[in-house]
Image (cartoon, rainbow, N blue to C red):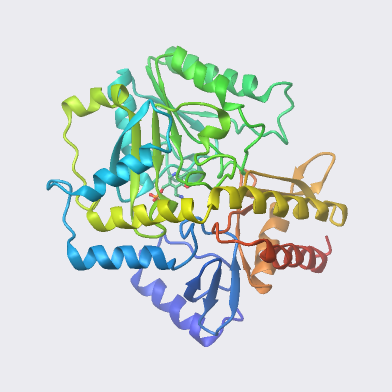
Amino acid sequence: DGLDADTRKLTDKRSKVLGESYRLFYRKPVHLVRGEGQYLWDAAGNKYLDVYNNVASIGHCHPAVIEAVNQQMKMLNTHTRYLHERILDYSEELLATTPDAIDRAMYMCTGSEANDLAIRVARAFSGGTGIIVSQEAYHGTSDLTSGASPALGTGQPLAPTTRLVPPPDHYRVNAPDLGEWFANEIQKQIDDMKAHGIKFAGFLADSIFSSDGVLPNPPGFLQKAVDVVHANGGIFIADEVQPGFARTGDAFWGFARHGVVPDVVTTGKPMGNGIPVSGLLAKSDVLAAFSDEIPYFNTFGGNPVAMAAAQAVLKVIKEEGLQEHSRVVGAKLQAELAKLMARHEAIGDVRGAGLFIGFELVSDRSSKTPDKALALDLIEKLRDHHVLTSVAGPYGNVLKLRPPLAFQESDIDWLVGALDKSLTELGR
Ligand code: PMP
């Protein structure tokens, strides 16, 4: 299988000691030992350009996070049953980035926990149980969230109260008004719930539809969908685990690109730059029905060290101007990627918002036939050129280009050059 001794040793050990549902990236797995900014190094000393990891969002091993966590860890780390300033200061800072109506914050450790709580909040508020998600959505590992995560495949049954809508795919859906088309798909599912005696509770969506293939356009298309959700007594939960924290460039939050105000916002991945911290932000009146009945305590959620990391991340985003950086560098990268279309027929579409770009591969541009095999070969080739990324979408044919926001204009040549060479090497 061509694996070197180091790789072989680690993969053998993994298969002996780890639970078997873990999946590695790459036919020849990468053994990383160090990270800095947008770069990663493997055990043999090779340097990689990271074009995939939005967790180390402000850059791998950012000194501001290391320092903040270190200082707080030395001083105190307890939980939310004692008074502490950090959680309050951070909540004020974080809620200042959301629309005024969103005025409450709660903290957990993972995106799954945030979405799990959001579904419970939706149910308490609406008195219903039905949840709508997109066809390729991923929202988490808990029973409630995996029951609303069709991306997990047929081995994971959806909850009987879950309904799916097709991806709002600007490239593939032929409708004069994508927003109206999408809102109509949501209405159809609400009607189907009704027909089966299920009361609608809410629509849970990642506002950039990452696992549906990265679908950001046109900005504003979500407005009509959110109107339909509200007209039917449900809430809109914006899963900002991927698009949040300045990623899309146009706005701090993905939902803000659409001009909508969610009832609940969930966050995770980039919030602590790798320290486990996630959050649920909500309108107080939406949260009330849940909070009045059920106490919430999350042992590690919102602890002083987690809050120190989150505070440092927010400060760096502001001080380093990372939202504007993402907008400007993302637009330049997108333009360079689009230029590759003149050289490679296999590229069907390039789309994105800020440093969150979908690069779609097709076997034929006019029929838009998805080319999953090429996408899989391409990520392996890119790995050989020391560029790390992965695929998304219902056909697995969209490269998800989502580097740490530390990605610089000077990195564009490496990425675009590697894509160009790789596609040529693959005869495409
Ligand atoms: N929502 C979205 C959109 C995600 O991408 C993920 C993680 N891939 C989650 C929720 C779950 O987050 P976590 O893995 O932190 O539980």
